[in-house]
Length: 210
Image (cartoon, rainbow, N blue to C red; front, side):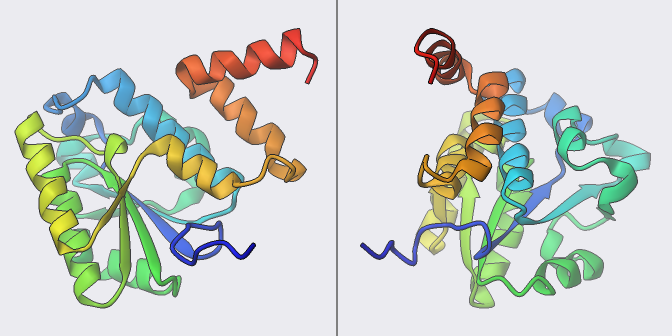
């Protein structure tokens, strides 16, 4: 009955949200931006519900890339979340970001951000080289083309990265619907951002009074 150590739990990993900013989204084309925003909301919401150790980092926020997505700020308000702004494309090469991530002392690191082939590949490969287990939420990452995104994911997987999706991330943290403390927040998050799955939850709660 013991679950695999390869599964993510709320306390065995750190989440790093990288460069979810307007300028980076404008050129993203491997998936519609409204889908990207929805998936980001699921990831950010999940991490907040389960109190996951989370670092939010931006690049050239005031001079080029602009503010973070509203879906990030909804769960991690800029006034209280201590975003780390960088000049480096590779988060791992920024001293403040590196210290913030490694200080969390989590063996597993989960990444999501823009763009896949630059700002995700960089920290993913760098963290693996330092002995971390790295997961990438591929549907909460974007790049300038399908080719760029897919080749980046392929490159990372070959290096040992574990690809997952946004809903998979959320449900892996919940794991058991009998966990009542998070059942309500998780289903509420999915009603708002979970597409047809969320509608199914709404339907069940309303029609079946469950």
